[in-house]
Length: 160
Image (cartoon, rainbow, N blue to C red; front, side):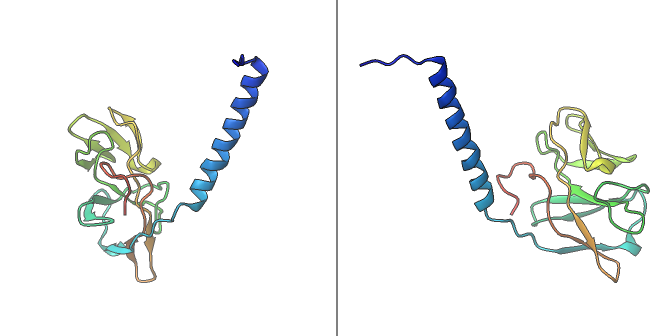
């Protein structure tokens, strides 16, 4: 016995499949284990100078990162002026190293550029994803700690 697929039956099946997908997707996200990042001291506020990047590795030794004081407020910025930020130093296009120059991150391989004041937003070049930002915390002594990664570091399926 063959059944013809009517428009009504198609809509019913599509709605049911969409509902199952939505519930399954939310359940999977809700049950996903949370990532635990180490808190790593990067510098002290007294050591950081405007426009002079500080390199470090985070969340592990094979993940280069850059901390910089921009001299202007930034999304996710810490410090008195909310202008200290940190990002992965690997371009999201093909993993080439990025450098901080003239208020922006530049990838010399394919000329992608990222705005550190706007959470690492891509604004030129082949990169289609923003640079992963590294949230920072400043303690009472002025020590700056890297505490997580927002976004996926290039070349990884998970950050930690």
